[in-house]
Length: 240
Figure (cartoon, rainbow, N blue to C red):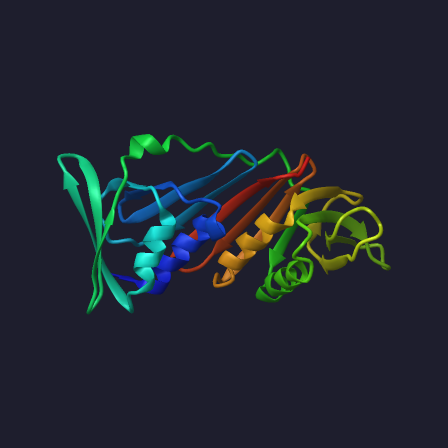
């Protein structure tokens, strides 16, 4: 059994509002691992206690799977059907509904690339729920602009701080900045990122217990979120 909210939470963390629709679910010793993304943005989402047999499942249309799950309630019984060694269907049932989702051949989904940590991170921050909410609000106030700068600067006391600046660089548009203190080893870093992707990640992880953000001056942003049974990790490359 798995609770509906836990399953939808896992899906939202890799689906990212439609960015990653076709993925493989890998289950090993009741641990679900999903890699998703493309060049410039990748993620890994894990559920540590999914009661399914060891398997690799091809999810060709996450949107349709989400729509099926949305009509259920409470705890779900999830089971798999296969022909020989190929998994062909996922069955999802609650106390009233019994749903069937057709699985894809994992071979047609290809392979995912993934990033490794750069040699160092010059900015390391703990993201509180208040920080996440504030950053989402800042982006929502400038929905028509998808650029964001992450910078390291100093405050009036000479302490290094991280600043998130939403808006473009023309000097004639609206801008919003938000500051967070943390472990910042270098000032005068200024790196642009896609604020739409950044917001989608934050939105999908609002329910997590803790979050961290790390930035390397080579242009790589890493985000990690954790709760009791779910872990998510994201790499985003800088805008060119």
